[in-house]
Length: 287
Image (cartoon, rainbow, N blue to C red; front, top):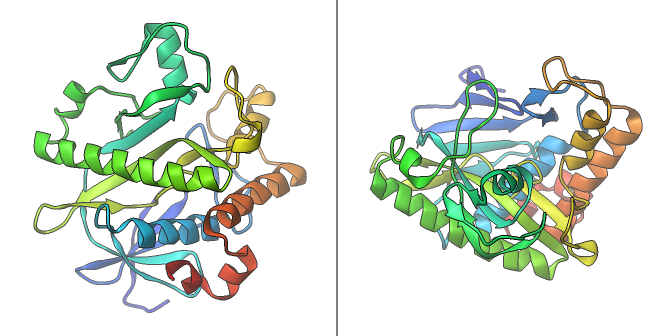
């Protein structure tokens, strides 16, 4: 790595470096977090799946909204991207009633201010996708919020723009994925502002870390679903009676292998590209 590259931040999964005044280098590690705790065991090639799949989606959704991708590096886990002023909300879109949305619905009959009909089942498809923002917690868990609370954090113009972008991105991606046997139950986007104040899609997009991917052929509402994301590792951790505080538990070899296989299968189903080909020639995802 060139000496001029300066490390500026670490996330749960990514390392961020400054290349110059206009570009950052985003490097996806193989770390995995569950319940906002980074586990001591890594998942081989996980960072490459996240990077390659994000780049693949960025290349195919630029007609919907601009994104931060500038270049994909040869290691398959590093992305050169535009510097942005990140907005302080997570832009979550839910197409199905699951996860924290299901918990909120059971408690209140609503999800982030969206009132839903009575009697809905866990994992049921929603009548229309819902934009359900959340806070970005520095420590602890993100908090689901409604529009009024979000407008305390983001101005109305930018909020309306990222809501529209998020819903359009979700509709485009979910229709595409369904044709390839994957249900995108929900997903999370992050946006930043460029120097002209325009909203730009950033971070990652439609990956097994930022989305809930279910196999369509066995989808059946009424309970939890099998998945192509880190739910496999999360379920193992929950089975231990772990209190969901650091340090997290080590993952056994079969959970590591099973998690990696699910990530790779999601990559291959969605892109139609053999993962080994991506490892050899990362730029293939941009074509």
